[in-house]
Image (cartoon, rainbow, N blue to C red):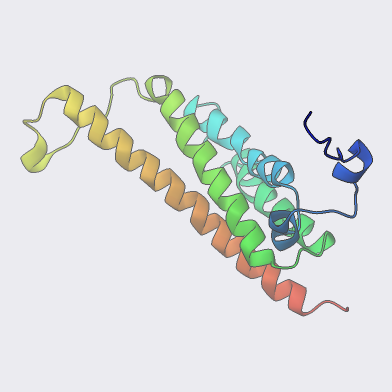
Length: 163
């Protein structure tokens, strides 16, 4: 009837020597990139729940340690493009930041923020939509900026290490 086509074995499909172009260019599997981004999530949650406050040592650790780990991993794994790799980690972090802030919105604010000036007379629902959209954009931007800064640091450090 129909000709039988050869079916590749599982060993061929999962061979460690075969890597996807995306993994080659970023130097780490996507799950690892997402895992690195997750390191920044505890601070976001604790801050939104009002359990950690600005200008405390714990907050400082929660702010500084995740990006330092990002840089250390990029350097230790000798990723081909530390800037691109950490930019992607930062973007993932920004998405997590935006989602977390949106999910904890009602917990973080006793009274929802409102717009002022010429926008004061808008319907309350419009206030919430506009502020939430801009908060999400701000979160994405923050993640990208953290990715850019850590990527530049890792790129600079990678240029000064022995081959």
